[in-house]
Image 1 (tube, rainbow, N blue to C red):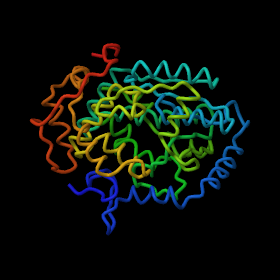
Image 2: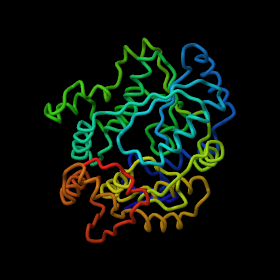
Image 3: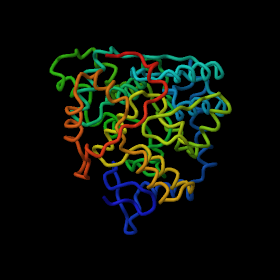
Length: 377
């Protein structure tokens, strides 16, 4: 495969392009972020935006929240740095690990926030996971679509126009450039979130095995509803220079937030995607389809930030990416499919024939908290 000459992102990465020097567009966007954007001016823009919504209703804004590193930092920043009163909105995808609840209790208590959580019918969730796996090789449709669509629905229902999301999409993909002040709308939802499948399409794919009412949480609000609300959904990362490691230091210090081991991720990244029991399997699907995994992603960030040598990043990715997750057996039991069926489904969505070889697989170590995971079979 062809790799970026600056980071280690391969040609199979979503939305990647290379310039005449072989440098990927994500690295070029990072250069703009580090060298060209006036972050003091951006912060003043953010202050101007939030001033228009402060003290105008029961809540100043909505903060979508999973309990991971990014949403925890978002919430801390909104409360402590911006001085806003948010409504915290959580979509429970059924995969949260035990530590998440412990972190959340500390966070909510220290920040004194109101929290609204929604959990979908699990029978429906299982069907959505399997169907989206078949259609796209990614079983997380219910989670991503639920997080974004349901949050915007709550904005409409509670009459809260301002929604503050986390990092800009330009951090990791190139649907938007680092200069753009992108906002989240239906176009972004269809382009980056729902894998090309809206709720109506999913209803058709499931052949009526779930009702349309069961899919309402995954339906993005209409343009008329959002226009009437005057919705403004911004990314904090467009106004605050995003640096994950520094932000993790902040939430560990200020909120007592704790990290933990995640399948397929080196221990020094104990903050990355800690909240979901299925994260290792999702990264494994990506490796099967695209030939790179979560460690590649993390090494690329460090390389762009000048914190890791490219050769070190390559070796780290080779060491950790592509391991068969120990949790895969549990996942397969939940969906009711065999490992052969799972691999065939994922490989049918392969981006290119990069050379996935089942016979070379090693199984990764079992996570310490797996015995505490609820039985969802």
